[in-house]
Length: 374
Image 1 (cartoon, rainbow, N blue to C red):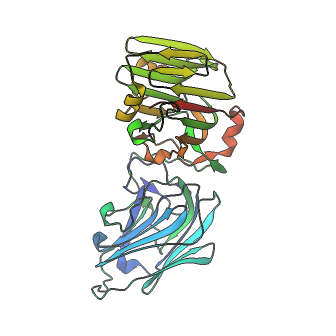
Image 2: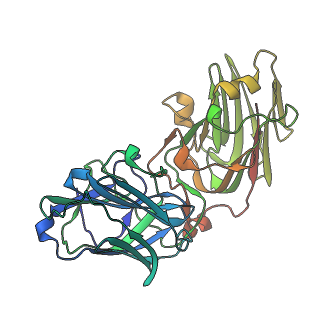
């Protein structure tokens, strides 16, 4: 698929972690301007933005964000350079970024102000203006092992109005890629459009501190549909809507061959799900005790914690409604959970931004759910 290089491009929703969302190439002999500029907007603190290389990747460059701050890494002959600096860019506003080469220096401007300058010199480097130059967005064309300072590449961001060197070439992308719109206005949070889930292995999440406190998962936001599910061998828990009834929340507690369902108030101010060593408690409405399962050990060994629905193709998965709305914050043991670190995340989900206009269609009441387990 060929995409206009000057149009609006959503850098999120890709299928592969390190493979660029799109790329282009040209003969170095056709390059008359070593200058690229584009508008950029994100709330994501980390990820790959813009990449370029020559000599089939032996000389390369990548612009990324770390803690919201621009970082440039360059590999050239025997030299690896990593420099981070300038203003934070993950404020949800559009910023004009310009990258250019000035001899042995690479310069980054943000909103017409120089923010970062990287100098590089090697006696082993020979000027060679033959061959191809490759450009890429939201990923890298060389192995991540070449990075001097590793980072998480996935980024929830949009760009527009791009001018890439002096090229009028279109971007090339995978034929399976489905373009996603950029929201006109955004707010912090993770957006679930009613399609897909994000899955975590509990063994990769913060663990038990005390048996009395258990493990807490807190969710803040405005949404409808299935909030989460928790699964292990012979066990499944689902917190979501009854099929066909949007006004009733359902808790399904399945233990081996047994199951129990309890209807909860439609729009509770607070939802609390407590998993202690041998018991589950939901808003003090439903309590289930079983000496046959040790939930603390199950959490440590690894259960599947899924936000937004029930994974798989089971009848239960098909009968539940996917979550639709904005999860403004997800905390496990007080630590913020980043959907970009999920074991699996559907490409339709936005990890770090929610459309402000969509909130009018959802209930305005915010509530949080706690999961305590071990």
